Image 1 (cartoon, helix red, strand yellow):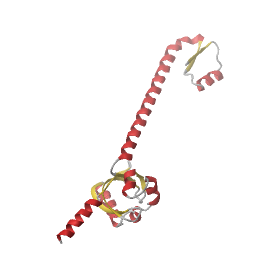
Image 2 (cartoon, one colour):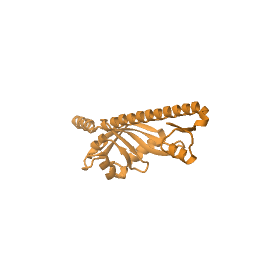
Image 3 (tube, rainbow, N blue to C red):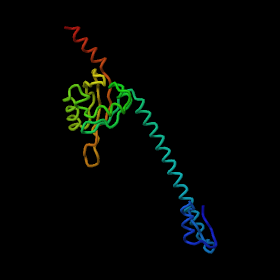
Image 4 (cartoon, rainbow, N blue to C red):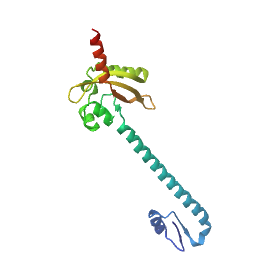
Length: 190
């Protein structure tokens, strides 16, 4: 909206702008109409572009959430001090929890509460510190009910622009059935 008036006080002009008017002109100065129209059209296009970008961002977030929430593998982010920052439903299920929130609330010291052998967390962190990432890292976790589950993890260290460690993120797969089969084969050969 461009307001054209024969007489408009500065206070009225400000009130119009606050209510959404793009510009205002006095009838005596209509030479400013073309630049005002161009500015109004440019601003409208910018608003449409911004709305399109927001919609694309929203759609990307929905897709990302769907991938994470429905992944078969456990997906996690952990803090350097040993807390879960984010886990998906598969991670919660692997560790015997009803929801990601329950897992993150219960396990606040990953090395001592999650790992059957806490030194495996130290090895996990050491390898990420030296290599930046790891793949095929096998270790044993405690499930919520105290039973054990073997996992295979791939992870990376996430660092900020200054190189400071922000978190670890990765994926986890339940390999308990494979480990039990390997153990059965070993016992069968003895």
